[in-house]
Length: 47
Image 1 (cartoon, rainbow, N blue to C red):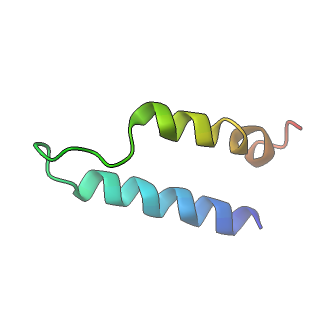
Image 2 (cartoon, rainbow, N blue to C red):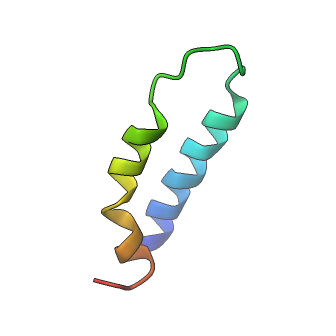
């Protein structure tokens, strides 16, 4: 399961880097932070 979560995070990161700098982001950094706040303790084994 950890591998799947890490893969999803990597894909999202790659898409963000491929976006043109002048384009409007569909997902803001704050939205990403809010979503990842629940995953980080799980990924770092700090439940």
